[in-house]
Image (cartoon, rainbow, N blue to C red; front, side, top):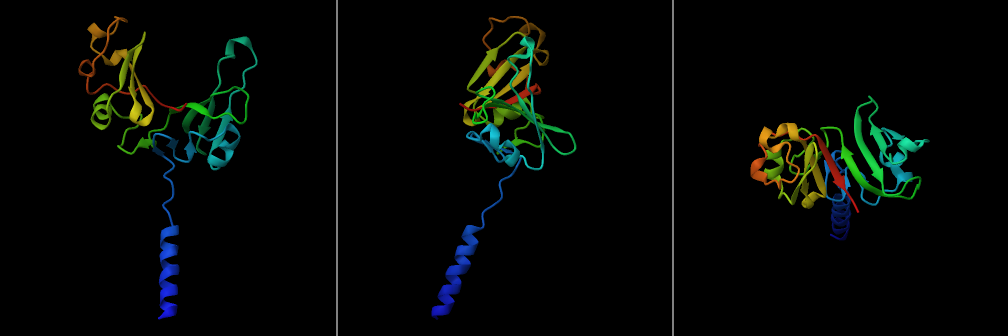
Length: 184
């Protein structure tokens, strides 16, 4: 009887200690796969050990503000483009991550291939900003922003920069141009 209790306890411990592997393409509020909001630049090679990490280093005055690190898979497909919160600092964390590969999806299935209707059906729209050539749809639930080109909008809404957009003015089939996750 005593041995069977020990075996049951060991078996239970084994079962509970076996966790699920992190989905490398799952987008959540504080992580994108194994990349988290506290991952430092110096740790990227560990997080993306099977992928290629490319750090842009500009040397002239015209590229001074470019501060991105791109990740490609082994086939050369772009996955992510990340902006550290500090330039030339290996201990910096990332302030924003641009999603480039459609395999990256939120828990509710939103990816770069989604439409405005998909976003609106999955999340509460927090804010819509009107820019020169695009609008930016913000979703605070996942720290995300989605850029939609104004070419996706009706022609009477494309040119007025003072217009405050309502979700009802954006066509359901408007495609996402850019998908960003923002971390502070």
